[in-house]
Length: 273
Image (cartoon, rainbow, N blue to C red; front, side, top):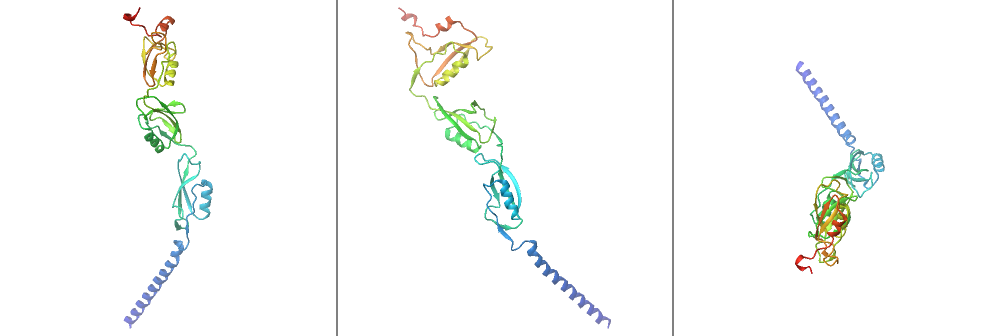
């Protein structure tokens, strides 16, 4: 009799456990659709090129979470969405996080690359890779034809490694080779050092400076001699090729007689009458 009661209790308990397990199993699958939002999938809209405020409001109104990062593209407007993840048209569950990359208002600084000595095409590519733009280009007679001779930013020479804002325009001076074009030799005797250098550079000539004595103020020092001379033995202008080298001799002060005497080439003694 006792064994019969034990058997009945066992089967009763077993049936209760099975019933509870079945209920839990059914409840789990019923709630699974709610937990995973099954059937509530949607496509991610395209918010690139939109203002971040409008893009964020649009995504959040559809139930998406939004996380914002930033980058800089000089050709794009500030606060514009540059990219999004997931991409446009991706099918995701409602409530999914969408990552947006937004264009900064202020450009970050970048080290200026060294373009001197490179070809124009290489320099242009390096500028683009560093998010810099090509500014004005000019040519100067030089043996390094097609090579970059100078790089400048806002009118001044810029050294490699100096920080410049991304999106800046970098101007380049490019060598155009040494042609056969001849010009009159400029007369820089009596000019200040600064004036002489600007004049020679403007005519496409290169120069080498020779200092005499103590120079206290280079910009105010004067050119008292030059080679080649500005005039030949009979007083006519000497001719020189573009890109040629001119030696300029500089001292702090010089007399008018000294400078006038150095302007014209002298006739060799054995040719004097």
